[in-house]
Amino acid sequence: MTRKFLWMAGAAVLVGCGAGESGGLGPSGEPPADEPPEGCLASVWVPGDFDFAMVREVEVEVLVRDLDGQPRPGIPVWVTDAVSDMPGFQTRLGAGVTGEDGRAVMSVLLPADQGAVQVVGAFMGGPNVAVVPVVNNRAVIALGGEQP
Image (cartoon, rainbow, N blue to C red):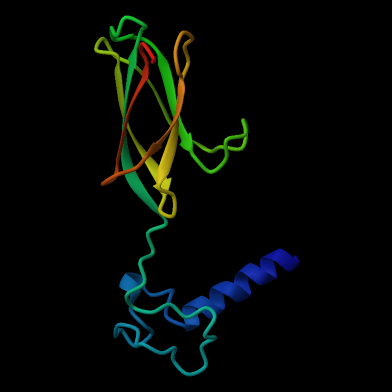
């Protein structure tokens, strides 16, 4: 009962401050001003130029090669966030299987505050885990292959 009340109270405050309107418009239909309207809690007021995007779409391209440098088809790969390097503490963002060219390309939704993904390939005989920086909403990595 208490949780339900808190959710309802929170929703009422947000609607009262203009967050319940579509398109980011205030209660009067005008864009929100630079200051919260009278009667609105400053801690829940959202300025008109606030970006509500909490995730961004990232294209991840993985190339898996064998020790001779040849592409490895049929290898399962998955993408997780790179928040923790401890197994089980990552959030799986996407998965795929390499094609005949040894590549897997997938689109994942990455939390907007993170700048890297972790890519894991299900194979032995070479590096199969890498943390890959995201540049211009793309992360590209080659796994496996001959290592120095």
